[in-house]
Length: 247
Image 1 (tube, rainbow, N blue to C red):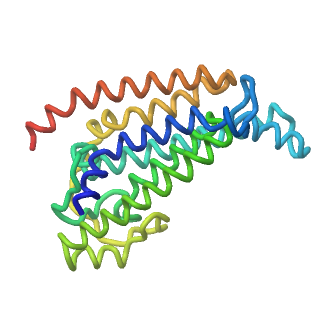
Image 2 (image 1 turned 90 degrees about the horizontal axis):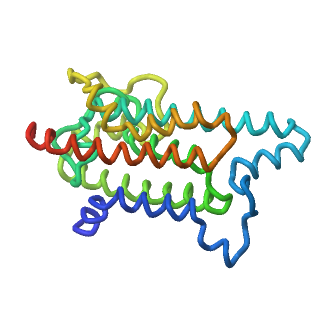
């Protein structure tokens, strides 16, 4: 369990490394799996494959994939913010597993792990800007790492919370959201303002795709996403002292 707790504390850095490797695809210099040029990313590669199949024209293929990316980024931002508002930003970005009580509010009435689902949705969106081999690497490794985190958290919560959490697990699905709430709502006031600020990176990715994506310049889109990442890190740095005082 000590190893699990240590890895959990470093989870954001693990995600950062996996995403960085996905964008860089360093193995391609040896294996030559991906193409070259300004469209040597999953977005361009997939658009070219769709055009070659005769299903759509190349321009329409780019637009279709961009629309999918925008939808994925929006879904990830909404779900992530809703989760943070219900659970509390300090818990979402905390370094330790939390076991205060079973959370039965917001998206946690529909699925047990909305934060991890939102991260995977964002991974799918960002994968469009990665080289094809890097996109496959990121989607698979992020998914596997999240599955490991989920199993470790469930084991931790089962040991700490006992029967209440066992009943919650039996009613609420792990990752595929139920169409209707599976448990009664808790009287918890959502912290929407704090949640939006704490998840501003997700909203930055969505805005970048929606506003800049139509220029069909993946490098420009990547720069906007990096700016969103920098803003998010600054905001979290400012929020942490305030969250510590509240605690």
